[in-house]
Image (cartoon, rainbow, N blue to C red; front, side):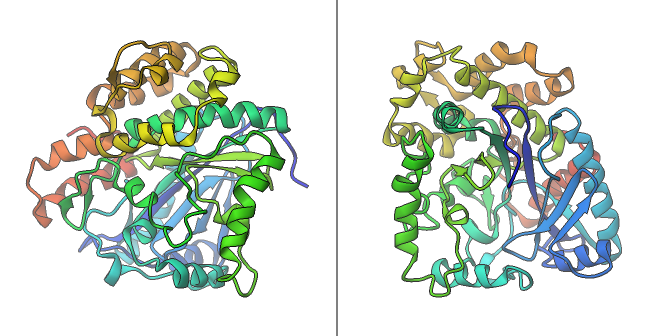
Length: 408
C-alpha cells in the first residue's frame, strides 16, 4: 500500500527527453543502449539516487523522474541537470545527445518511429494496433508531468476543482512545440493540438481534455473510468490495459497512488525552466485550493465545455491569446479581457513571495520574453531551412547541457 500524503506535502515531477544523433540531428532510437550502458544489462528502470530513469512508448525517448515523492522542489533543477549531464556523457561515444522541447522539429514519424520492444512492450503493441502510434501525437511528444497528492475525497475535491480551473492557461506558460517536419504548424503548442485527437478511435479516453466535474473517487469511477473500460474491452482481448493508464485527460486521477497528474505541460529547454514552471503552477493551484481567489462552489461549477473553449485557442496562440470570458477572468480577480501573458504576470505577482528566489529569473524570462515556442519562432525568423532549424535547435541542446534558458 502506497503511503498517502496530504495536499502539497510532496511532489512528483517527470521530464521526457528525446535522443538525437549528434551529426545528422535525427532521432536516435537507442534508449535501450543507454539504459544498458548505465546498468550493465538492459533494464526498463534505473534508480540513480534521487532521480530515476525509464523508457517510454518509443525507443528514442527517456523519462527522468523524481525517485518517489519529494518534499523539496527547489533542489530539483540541479538534480535533473546532474542526470542530464551524466546521460549526455554516456551518449557521447555513441554520437548521440539529449534534446529538449515538446516535439522534434524535423522528425518524420512514419519513417523514424521505433516502438519500445522490451518490458511492457505487449501494452505498447496493443496501443499501436488500436491507435497507430507512428504519428506526431504519439511518437514525437515530450512533456512534463506534475504529480500532486491528495489524502481522501475531501482533498481530492479541492485539488481536482482547482486543477480544472488552471488547466486552460497552461499552454500560455509552457508551449514549446511550434514546428513539425520543418514547418511552422500555426500552433504554439502543436503537441496539445495532437493530444486532443490522437485517441479519436476511443473518444472516452481523452474526453474534452478538461476532466468532467467529478469530485469523489466513486464519481470518478462511474463517470470516467467505467466508460473507458467499456470502450476498450472489445479491443483489449488479453485484458492487459489499466484504466489509470488509459485515462488521457489533461489531468488524471491516479487513485492507485492518491495523486492527480497534470499532463498539459510541454517540456522546456532545461530543468531550470521546467521546475520554475512547476513551482508557479503549484503556487497558483494553492491560491484556489485555499480559496484565496474563488470559492470551492464557484470553482466546481465550471463545466468542461466552457473550460475547453478557453483552452482551445490558447493551444494555438499561447500567451498571445486574449481571454474574453469575463466570468473566467473573475476567478483570477481580473475583470476585463486580457492576454494569457498578463493573467500569468498577475498570478506571479500574487504568489511571488512564496516562490524561492532561485526560480524568479526563469519565470520572469518566460513571462517577459514569451513561451519557448514564441522564442523559438523569433530565433527561426521565417527561415525554415533544415540548416537554420538545426542551428537553432542545437542551441536548445546546449541550453539543456548547461541548464540555461533560451534567449534568441
